[in-house]
Length: 218
Length: 218
DNA sequence: ACCTATTTTTAGACTTATCTAAATATATTT
DNA sequence: AAATATATTTAGATAAGTCTAAAAATAGGT
Ligand SMILES: [Mn+2]
Ligand SMILES: [Mn+2]
Ligand SMILES: [Mn+2]
Ligand SMILES: [Mn+2]
Image (cartoon, rainbow over all chains, first blue to last red; front, side, top):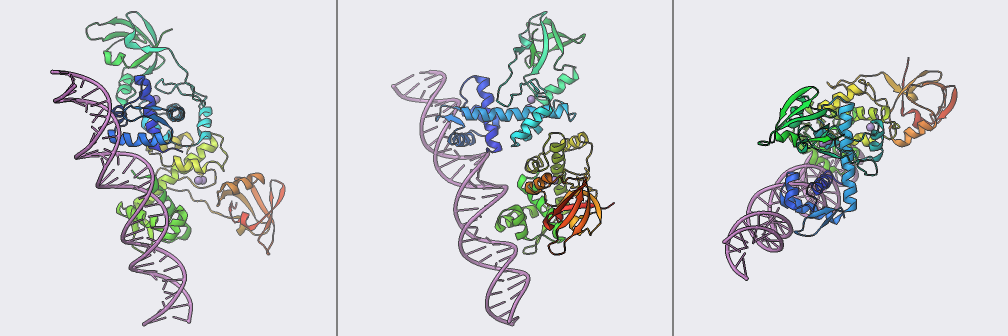
Protein backbone atom coordinates (compact mmCIF):
# COMPACT_ATOMS: atom_id res chain seq x y z
CA UNK A 1 0.00 0.00 0.00
CA UNK A 2 2.28 2.79 1.25
CA UNK A 3 6.04 2.85 1.66
CA UNK A 4 7.80 2.90 5.00
CA UNK A 5 8.84 6.46 4.32
CA UNK A 6 5.34 7.60 3.47
CA UNK A 7 3.98 5.97 6.62
CA UNK A 8 6.66 7.65 8.72
CA UNK A 9 5.78 11.04 7.30
CA UNK A 10 2.09 10.50 8.00
CA UNK A 11 2.86 9.54 11.57
CA UNK A 12 5.06 12.60 12.03
CA UNK A 13 2.37 14.91 10.64
CA UNK A 14 -0.17 13.27 12.91
CA UNK A 15 1.93 13.92 16.02
CA UNK A 16 2.81 17.49 15.01
CA UNK A 17 -0.81 18.37 14.31
CA UNK A 18 -1.64 17.40 17.88
CA UNK A 19 1.42 19.07 19.34
CA UNK A 20 0.76 22.48 17.78
CA UNK A 21 -2.96 22.16 17.09
CA UNK A 22 -2.41 23.62 13.64
CA UNK A 23 -1.18 22.82 10.15
CA UNK A 24 2.34 21.47 10.04
CA UNK A 25 5.16 23.56 8.60
CA UNK A 26 7.81 22.15 6.31
CA UNK A 27 10.57 22.98 8.76
CA UNK A 28 8.79 21.41 11.73
CA UNK A 29 8.35 18.25 9.71
CA UNK A 30 11.98 18.30 8.58
CA UNK A 31 13.05 18.56 12.20
CA UNK A 32 10.74 15.74 13.30
CA UNK A 33 11.83 13.49 10.44
CA UNK A 34 15.47 14.39 10.87
CA UNK A 35 15.80 15.35 7.23
CA UNK A 36 16.04 18.46 5.03
CA UNK A 37 13.22 20.83 4.20
CA UNK A 38 13.65 20.17 0.50
CA UNK A 39 13.14 16.45 1.03
CA UNK A 40 10.00 17.23 3.00
CA UNK A 41 8.59 19.36 0.19
CA UNK A 42 9.19 16.53 -2.27
CA UNK A 43 7.48 13.99 -0.06
CA UNK A 44 4.56 16.27 0.76
CA UNK A 45 3.90 16.65 -2.93
CA UNK A 46 3.78 12.92 -3.33
CA UNK A 47 1.50 12.46 -0.32
CA UNK A 48 -0.71 15.20 -1.73
CA UNK A 49 -0.97 13.42 -5.09
CA UNK A 50 -2.01 10.31 -3.23
CA UNK A 51 -4.66 12.32 -1.37
CA UNK A 52 -3.13 11.53 1.99
CA UNK A 53 -2.57 15.17 2.90
CA UNK A 54 -3.99 18.57 2.09
CA UNK A 55 -1.25 20.85 0.90
CA UNK A 56 -1.08 24.39 -0.40
CA UNK A 57 2.33 25.73 -1.28
CA UNK A 58 3.93 27.74 1.52
CA UNK A 59 0.85 27.07 3.68
CA UNK A 60 1.92 23.94 5.49
CA UNK A 61 0.26 20.57 5.37
CA UNK A 62 -2.43 18.63 7.19
CA UNK A 63 -3.68 15.07 7.01
CA UNK A 64 -6.69 14.17 4.90
CA UNK A 65 -9.21 11.76 6.34
CA UNK A 66 -7.39 8.92 4.60
CA UNK A 67 -4.01 10.15 5.83
CA UNK A 68 -5.32 10.39 9.36
CA UNK A 69 -6.76 6.89 9.23
CA UNK A 70 -3.52 5.52 7.84
CA UNK A 71 -1.36 7.27 10.45
CA UNK A 72 -3.54 5.91 13.24
CA UNK A 73 -3.18 2.36 11.97
CA UNK A 74 0.60 2.72 11.97
CA UNK A 75 0.51 4.10 15.52
CA UNK A 76 -1.80 1.26 16.52
CA UNK A 77 0.70 -1.29 15.27
CA UNK A 78 3.63 0.53 16.85
CA UNK A 79 2.03 0.51 20.28
CA UNK A 80 0.70 -3.04 20.06
CA UNK A 81 4.17 -4.30 19.21
CA UNK A 82 5.69 -2.30 22.06
CA UNK A 83 3.20 -3.89 24.41
CA UNK A 84 4.01 -7.32 23.01
CA UNK A 85 7.75 -6.82 23.45
CA UNK A 86 7.39 -5.74 27.08
CA UNK A 87 4.63 -8.09 28.19
CA UNK A 88 5.55 -11.23 26.29
CA UNK A 89 9.23 -10.99 25.41
CA UNK A 90 10.67 -9.49 28.60
CA UNK A 91 11.86 -6.25 27.06
CA UNK A 92 12.27 -3.20 29.24
CA UNK A 93 10.19 -0.15 28.30
CA UNK A 94 13.28 1.73 27.17
CA UNK A 95 14.26 -0.93 24.61
CA UNK A 96 11.15 -1.28 22.51
CA UNK A 97 10.77 1.88 20.47
CA UNK A 98 13.33 1.22 17.74
CA UNK A 99 12.09 -2.30 17.13
CA UNK A 100 8.49 -1.07 17.03
CA UNK A 101 9.60 1.49 14.42
CA UNK A 102 10.36 -1.49 12.20
CA UNK A 103 7.40 -3.67 13.15
CA UNK A 104 4.83 -0.89 12.67
CA UNK A 105 5.27 -1.21 8.90
CA UNK A 106 4.33 -4.89 8.63
CA UNK A 107 1.28 -5.11 6.42
CA UNK A 108 -1.41 -7.56 7.50
CA UNK A 109 -4.71 -6.58 9.00
CA UNK A 110 -5.19 -10.10 10.26
CA UNK A 111 -1.83 -10.01 12.02
CA UNK A 112 -2.67 -6.74 13.73
CA UNK A 113 -6.03 -8.02 14.85
CA UNK A 114 -4.76 -11.39 16.06
CA UNK A 115 -1.90 -9.73 17.90
CA UNK A 116 -4.36 -7.36 19.57
CA UNK A 117 -6.52 -10.33 20.59
CA UNK A 118 -3.51 -12.33 21.79
CA UNK A 119 -2.49 -9.41 23.99
CA UNK A 120 -6.00 -9.07 25.43
CA UNK A 121 -6.89 -5.84 23.60
CA UNK A 122 -4.62 -3.61 25.67
CA UNK A 123 -5.66 0.03 26.04
CA UNK A 124 -2.22 1.58 26.65
CA UNK A 125 1.33 0.90 25.56
CA UNK A 126 4.28 0.56 27.98
CA UNK A 127 4.69 4.34 28.06
CA UNK A 128 1.07 5.02 28.92
CA UNK A 129 0.11 6.10 25.39
CA UNK A 130 -3.33 5.00 24.20
CA UNK A 131 -3.55 2.16 21.68
CA UNK A 132 -6.23 2.95 19.11
CA UNK A 133 -8.68 0.13 18.42
CA UNK A 134 -9.24 -1.37 14.97
CA UNK A 135 -11.61 1.47 14.10
CA UNK A 136 -9.03 4.05 15.11
CA UNK A 137 -10.65 5.19 18.36
CA UNK A 138 -8.33 6.31 21.11
CA UNK A 139 -9.40 6.03 24.72
CA UNK A 140 -8.78 9.46 26.17
CA UNK A 141 -7.56 9.78 29.74
CA UNK A 142 -7.79 12.96 31.79
CA UNK A 143 -4.16 13.03 32.66
CA UNK A 144 -2.05 16.07 33.51
CA UNK A 145 1.60 16.78 33.98
CA UNK A 146 3.07 16.21 37.43
CA UNK A 147 4.50 19.72 37.22
CA UNK A 148 0.95 21.09 37.20
CA UNK A 149 0.16 19.61 40.60
CA UNK A 150 0.38 21.80 43.68
CA UNK A 151 1.66 21.04 47.14
CA UNK A 152 -0.16 18.18 48.92
CA UNK A 153 -1.92 17.08 45.72
CA UNK A 154 -1.56 13.48 44.60
CA UNK A 155 -2.31 11.07 41.79
CA UNK A 156 -1.22 7.98 39.92
CA UNK A 157 1.60 7.99 37.44
CA UNK A 158 0.00 7.00 34.13
CA UNK A 159 2.43 7.95 31.38
CA UNK A 160 5.58 9.62 30.17
CA UNK A 161 5.75 12.55 27.78
CA UNK A 162 9.39 11.96 26.89
CA UNK A 163 9.94 8.30 26.16
CA UNK A 164 13.65 8.44 25.39
CA UNK A 165 15.78 5.64 26.78
CA UNK A 166 17.65 8.14 28.88
CA UNK A 167 14.55 9.39 30.65
CA UNK A 168 13.07 5.91 31.07
CA UNK A 169 16.25 4.54 32.59
CA UNK A 170 16.37 7.52 34.93
CA UNK A 171 12.86 6.62 36.08
CA UNK A 172 13.84 2.97 36.53
CA UNK A 173 16.81 3.98 38.61
CA UNK A 174 14.59 6.07 40.85
CA UNK A 175 11.83 3.48 41.07
CA UNK A 176 9.31 5.63 39.29
CA UNK A 177 6.97 3.49 37.22
CA UNK A 178 3.47 3.63 35.74
CA UNK A 179 0.76 2.75 38.23
CA UNK A 180 2.53 4.13 41.26
CA UNK A 181 1.02 6.76 43.62
CA UNK A 182 2.78 10.07 43.75
CA UNK A 183 2.14 12.85 46.28
CA UNK A 184 3.66 16.32 46.07
CA UNK A 185 5.20 17.15 49.44
CA UNK A 186 6.93 20.40 48.54
CA UNK A 187 7.19 22.59 45.50
CA UNK A 188 10.09 24.98 45.05
CA UNK A 189 9.05 28.21 43.35
CA UNK A 190 12.62 29.14 42.50
CA UNK A 191 13.51 26.27 40.15
CA UNK A 192 10.24 24.32 39.88
CA UNK A 193 11.74 21.27 41.54
CA UNK A 194 9.53 19.27 43.86
CA UNK A 195 9.78 16.81 46.68
CA UNK A 196 7.50 13.88 46.04
CA UNK A 197 6.41 10.84 48.00
CA UNK A 198 6.45 7.63 46.02
CA UNK A 199 6.04 4.25 47.75
CA UNK A 200 6.97 5.58 51.17
CA UNK A 201 10.15 7.15 49.79
CA UNK A 202 10.81 10.85 49.47
CA UNK A 203 12.45 11.99 46.28
CA UNK A 204 13.45 15.41 44.97
CA UNK A 205 12.96 15.85 41.25
CA UNK A 206 13.73 18.74 38.89
CA UNK A 207 11.08 20.46 36.80
CA UNK A 208 12.42 18.68 33.71
CA UNK A 209 11.30 15.43 35.32
CA UNK A 210 7.90 16.59 36.53
CA UNK A 211 7.27 18.11 33.13
CA UNK A 212 7.55 14.72 31.53
CA UNK A 213 5.45 12.60 33.83
CA UNK A 214 1.70 12.27 33.35
CA UNK A 215 -0.48 11.92 36.42
CA UNK A 216 -4.09 10.97 36.79
CA UNK A 217 -5.95 12.50 39.70
CA UNK A 218 -8.48 10.31 41.51
CA UNK B 1 23.07 -3.90 8.10
CA UNK B 2 21.76 -5.26 4.78
CA UNK B 3 18.75 -4.19 2.75
CA UNK B 4 15.61 -6.27 2.37
CA UNK B 5 16.53 -6.91 -1.23
CA UNK B 6 20.04 -8.04 -0.39
CA UNK B 7 18.71 -10.38 2.27
CA UNK B 8 16.19 -11.84 -0.15
CA UNK B 9 18.89 -12.54 -2.71
CA UNK B 10 21.06 -14.24 -0.10
CA UNK B 11 18.16 -16.42 0.95
CA UNK B 12 17.41 -17.36 -2.66
CA UNK B 13 21.05 -18.25 -3.34
CA UNK B 14 21.09 -20.33 -0.16
CA UNK B 15 18.06 -22.36 -1.24
CA UNK B 16 19.27 -22.81 -4.82
CA UNK B 17 22.71 -23.99 -3.69
CA UNK B 18 21.02 -26.76 -1.77
CA UNK B 19 18.54 -27.55 -4.51
CA UNK B 20 21.17 -28.06 -7.22
CA UNK B 21 24.23 -28.74 -5.06
CA UNK B 22 26.25 -26.37 -7.22
CA UNK B 23 26.94 -22.71 -7.91
CA UNK B 24 23.86 -20.70 -8.76
CA UNK B 25 23.32 -19.40 -12.29
CA UNK B 26 22.08 -15.91 -13.05
CA UNK B 27 18.99 -17.25 -14.77
CA UNK B 28 18.09 -19.62 -11.95
CA UNK B 29 18.35 -16.74 -9.53
CA UNK B 30 16.29 -14.49 -11.77
CA UNK B 31 13.59 -17.15 -11.88
CA UNK B 32 13.66 -17.65 -8.10
CA UNK B 33 13.56 -13.91 -7.42
CA UNK B 34 10.93 -13.30 -10.07
CA UNK B 35 13.06 -10.64 -11.71
CA UNK B 36 15.23 -10.14 -14.80
CA UNK B 37 18.69 -11.59 -15.34
CA UNK B 38 20.16 -8.11 -15.76
CA UNK B 39 18.85 -7.08 -12.35
CA UNK B 40 20.41 -10.21 -10.89
CA UNK B 41 23.80 -9.40 -12.37
CA UNK B 42 23.65 -5.91 -10.88
CA UNK B 43 22.76 -7.22 -7.46
CA UNK B 44 25.35 -10.00 -7.55
CA UNK B 45 28.01 -7.40 -8.19
CA UNK B 46 26.92 -5.48 -5.16
CA UNK B 47 26.81 -8.59 -2.98
CA UNK B 48 30.24 -9.48 -4.26
CA UNK B 49 31.63 -6.05 -3.32
CA UNK B 50 30.21 -6.57 0.16
CA UNK B 51 31.92 -9.97 0.33
CA UNK B 52 28.63 -11.78 0.77
CA UNK B 53 29.08 -13.94 -2.31
CA UNK B 54 31.87 -15.31 -4.46
CA UNK B 55 31.34 -14.35 -8.05
CA UNK B 56 33.26 -14.79 -11.26
CA UNK B 57 31.70 -13.38 -14.40
CA UNK B 58 29.72 -15.94 -16.37
CA UNK B 59 30.60 -18.57 -13.72
CA UNK B 60 27.61 -18.27 -11.41
CA UNK B 61 27.61 -17.28 -7.79
CA UNK B 62 27.91 -18.90 -4.38
CA UNK B 63 27.62 -17.65 -0.84
CA UNK B 64 30.69 -16.65 1.14
CA UNK B 65 30.88 -17.70 4.76
CA UNK B 66 29.43 -14.33 5.73
CA UNK B 67 26.69 -14.63 3.10
CA UNK B 68 25.82 -18.10 4.33
CA UNK B 69 25.64 -16.95 7.93
CA UNK B 70 23.48 -13.98 6.99
CA UNK B 71 21.10 -16.10 4.89
CA UNK B 72 20.69 -18.56 7.73
CA UNK B 73 19.79 -15.81 10.17
CA UNK B 74 17.09 -14.55 7.81
CA UNK B 75 15.73 -18.09 7.41
CA UNK B 76 15.82 -18.49 11.18
CA UNK B 77 13.69 -15.41 11.64
CA UNK B 78 11.32 -16.41 8.86
CA UNK B 79 10.63 -19.78 10.41
CA UNK B 80 10.41 -18.54 13.99
CA UNK B 81 7.81 -15.96 12.93
CA UNK B 82 5.87 -18.61 11.02
CA UNK B 83 5.83 -20.74 14.14
CA UNK B 84 4.70 -17.77 16.21
CA UNK B 85 1.88 -16.96 13.83
CA UNK B 86 0.54 -20.52 13.83
CA UNK B 87 1.11 -21.42 17.48
CA UNK B 88 0.28 -18.11 19.17
CA UNK B 89 -1.89 -16.14 16.78
CA UNK B 90 -4.15 -18.85 15.37
CA UNK B 91 -2.98 -18.60 11.79
CA UNK B 92 -3.35 -21.58 9.51
CA UNK B 93 -0.13 -22.93 7.99
CA UNK B 94 -1.09 -21.70 4.53
CA UNK B 95 -1.43 -18.07 5.68
CA UNK B 96 1.91 -17.37 7.28
CA UNK B 97 4.52 -17.27 4.53
CA UNK B 98 3.85 -13.80 3.14
CA UNK B 99 3.79 -12.20 6.57
CA UNK B 100 7.00 -14.01 7.52
CA UNK B 101 8.56 -12.61 4.34
CA UNK B 102 8.09 -9.20 5.91
CA UNK B 103 8.97 -10.11 9.50
CA UNK B 104 12.18 -11.91 8.55
CA UNK B 105 13.82 -8.54 7.84
CA UNK B 106 13.29 -7.03 11.29
CA UNK B 107 16.70 -6.29 12.74
CA UNK B 108 17.19 -7.09 16.42
CA UNK B 109 19.20 -9.99 17.73
CA UNK B 110 17.55 -9.64 21.08
CA UNK B 111 14.11 -9.82 19.50
CA UNK B 112 15.02 -13.00 17.63
CA UNK B 113 16.42 -14.60 20.74
CA UNK B 114 13.56 -13.59 23.01
CA UNK B 115 11.03 -14.77 20.45
CA UNK B 116 12.83 -18.10 20.20
CA UNK B 117 12.76 -18.42 23.98
CA UNK B 118 9.11 -17.38 24.20
CA UNK B 119 8.22 -20.09 21.69
CA UNK B 120 10.19 -22.72 23.61
CA UNK B 121 13.08 -23.01 21.12
CA UNK B 122 11.06 -24.84 18.47
CA UNK B 123 13.01 -27.13 16.14
CA UNK B 124 10.70 -27.02 13.11
CA UNK B 125 8.40 -24.51 11.50
CA UNK B 126 4.73 -25.23 10.62
CA UNK B 127 5.80 -26.82 7.32
CA UNK B 128 8.29 -29.18 8.94
CA UNK B 129 11.33 -27.16 7.90
CA UNK B 130 14.15 -26.99 10.47
CA UNK B 131 14.63 -23.75 12.41
CA UNK B 132 18.35 -23.01 12.76
CA UNK B 133 19.50 -22.11 16.26
CA UNK B 134 21.27 -18.86 17.14
CA UNK B 135 24.57 -20.30 15.94
CA UNK B 136 23.06 -21.33 12.62
CA UNK B 137 22.91 -25.08 13.23
CA UNK B 138 20.08 -26.94 11.57
CA UNK B 139 18.79 -30.14 13.07
CA UNK B 140 18.81 -32.62 10.22
CA UNK B 141 16.05 -35.20 9.97
CA UNK B 142 16.29 -38.37 7.93
CA UNK B 143 13.13 -37.74 6.02
CA UNK B 144 12.25 -39.00 2.55
CA UNK B 145 9.51 -38.32 0.06
CA UNK B 146 6.30 -40.31 0.39
CA UNK B 147 6.66 -41.17 -3.30
CA UNK B 148 9.84 -43.08 -2.47
CA UNK B 149 8.00 -45.49 -0.19
CA UNK B 150 6.97 -48.88 -1.49
CA UNK B 151 3.82 -50.91 -0.92
CA UNK B 152 3.14 -51.75 2.73
CA UNK B 153 5.78 -49.33 3.99
CA UNK B 154 4.80 -46.69 6.51
CA UNK B 155 6.01 -43.61 8.33
CA UNK B 156 5.05 -40.31 9.89
CA UNK B 157 4.33 -37.21 7.85
CA UNK B 158 6.97 -34.66 8.92
CA UNK B 159 7.03 -31.98 6.27
CA UNK B 160 5.97 -30.54 2.95
CA UNK B 161 8.25 -29.82 0.03
CA UNK B 162 5.81 -27.48 -1.68
CA UNK B 163 4.42 -25.05 0.85
CA UNK B 164 2.13 -23.09 -1.44
CA UNK B 165 -1.28 -22.17 -0.07
CA UNK B 166 -2.89 -24.30 -2.74
CA UNK B 167 -1.08 -27.46 -1.71
CA UNK B 168 -1.51 -26.81 2.02
CA UNK B 169 -5.22 -26.24 1.65
CA UNK B 170 -5.49 -29.42 -0.38
CA UNK B 171 -3.84 -31.27 2.50
CA UNK B 172 -6.18 -29.64 5.03
CA UNK B 173 -9.17 -30.65 2.95
CA UNK B 174 -7.95 -34.27 2.91
CA UNK B 175 -7.02 -34.33 6.59
CA UNK B 176 -3.34 -34.77 5.90
CA UNK B 177 -1.25 -33.04 8.53
CA UNK B 178 2.22 -33.20 10.06
CA UNK B 179 2.55 -35.87 12.73
CA UNK B 180 0.07 -38.28 11.21
CA UNK B 181 0.90 -41.90 10.38
CA UNK B 182 0.75 -42.85 6.74
CA UNK B 183 0.89 -46.36 5.30
CA UNK B 184 1.15 -47.17 1.61
CA UNK B 185 -1.54 -49.71 0.73
CA UNK B 186 -1.11 -49.78 -3.02
CA UNK B 187 1.19 -48.16 -5.51
CA UNK B 188 0.14 -47.79 -9.15
CA UNK B 189 3.07 -48.23 -11.51
CA UNK B 190 1.21 -46.64 -14.39
CA UNK B 191 0.80 -43.12 -13.02
CA UNK B 192 2.66 -43.26 -9.70
CA UNK B 193 -0.52 -42.68 -7.73
CA UNK B 194 -0.91 -44.49 -4.43
CA UNK B 195 -3.57 -45.58 -2.04
CA UNK B 196 -2.61 -44.61 1.48
CA UNK B 197 -4.02 -45.28 4.91
CA UNK B 198 -4.16 -42.21 7.14
CA UNK B 199 -6.06 -42.28 10.44
CA UNK B 200 -8.14 -45.32 9.48
CA UNK B 201 -9.17 -43.68 6.20
CA UNK B 202 -8.10 -44.81 2.77
CA UNK B 203 -7.12 -42.10 0.33
CA UNK B 204 -5.87 -42.20 -3.23
CA UNK B 205 -3.30 -39.53 -4.05
CA UNK B 206 -1.48 -38.63 -7.26
CA UNK B 207 2.28 -38.70 -7.61
CA UNK B 208 2.32 -34.88 -7.50
CA UNK B 209 1.05 -35.14 -3.94
CA UNK B 210 3.35 -37.95 -2.76
CA UNK B 211 6.27 -36.09 -4.31
CA UNK B 212 5.66 -33.14 -2.01
CA UNK B 213 5.16 -34.88 1.31
CA UNK B 214 8.09 -35.76 3.55
CA UNK B 215 7.90 -38.93 5.62
CA UNK B 216 10.03 -40.18 8.46
CA UNK B 217 10.37 -43.90 8.80
CA UNK B 218 10.40 -45.35 12.31
C1' DA C 1 36.79 -25.61 -35.83
C1' DC C 2 32.76 -23.24 -36.89
C1' DC C 3 28.04 -21.95 -36.56
C1' DT C 4 24.12 -21.30 -33.71
C1' DA C 5 21.45 -21.07 -29.57
C1' DT C 6 21.51 -19.84 -24.97
C1' DT C 7 23.18 -17.43 -21.09
C1' DT C 8 25.11 -13.57 -19.11
C1' DT C 9 26.64 -8.95 -19.00
C1' DT C 10 26.54 -4.08 -20.29
C1' DA C 11 24.44 0.34 -21.54
C1' DG C 12 21.12 3.44 -20.78
C1' DA C 13 16.73 4.66 -18.66
C1' DC C 14 13.27 5.06 -14.80
C1' DT C 15 11.47 5.49 -9.86
C1' DT C 16 11.97 6.52 -4.98
C1' DA C 17 14.02 8.98 -1.58
C1' DT C 18 17.42 11.67 -0.40
C1' DC C 19 20.95 15.73 -0.64
C1' DT C 20 23.12 20.72 -1.69
C1' DA C 21 22.74 25.07 -3.60
C1' DA C 22 20.05 28.53 -5.60
C1' DA C 23 15.72 30.90 -6.25
C1' DT C 24 11.46 32.58 -4.55
C1' DA C 25 7.85 33.57 -1.27
C1' DT C 26 6.47 35.04 3.28
C1' DA C 27 7.29 37.28 7.69
C1' DT C 28 9.48 40.70 10.54
C1' DT C 29 11.82 45.02 11.40
C1' DT C 30 12.91 49.46 10.73
C1' DA D 1 6.74 50.71 2.39
C1' DA D 2 11.15 49.15 1.91
C1' DA D 3 14.80 46.31 3.64
C1' DT D 4 16.09 42.29 5.78
C1' DA D 5 15.55 37.78 7.65
C1' DT D 6 13.41 33.41 7.56
C1' DA D 7 10.86 29.72 5.45
C1' DT D 8 9.83 27.18 1.51
C1' DT D 9 10.30 25.54 -3.01
C1' DT D 10 12.89 24.41 -7.21
C1' DA D 11 16.79 22.67 -9.87
C1' DG D 12 20.02 19.46 -10.41
C1' DA D 13 22.67 15.50 -8.46
C1' DT D 14 23.22 10.92 -6.21
C1' DA D 15 22.28 6.00 -4.73
C1' DA D 16 19.48 1.75 -4.75
C1' DG D 17 16.96 -1.27 -7.31
C1' DT D 18 14.69 -2.25 -11.17
C1' DC D 19 13.71 -2.51 -16.41
C1' DT D 20 14.50 -3.11 -21.85
C1' DA D 21 17.45 -3.67 -25.56
C1' DA D 22 21.89 -4.61 -27.27
C1' DA D 23 26.46 -6.70 -26.90
C1' DA D 24 29.46 -10.28 -25.44
C1' DA D 25 30.59 -14.80 -23.69
C1' DT D 26 29.74 -19.64 -23.25
C1' DA D 27 27.86 -24.12 -24.59
C1' DG D 28 26.25 -27.47 -28.03
C1' DG D 29 25.88 -29.59 -32.46
C1' DT D 30 27.75 -30.65 -36.79
MN1 LIG E 1 7.53 4.17 20.55
MN1 LIG F 1 5.23 4.00 23.18
MN1 LIG G 1 7.77 -19.58 4.43
MN1 LIG H 1 7.97 -22.49 6.36
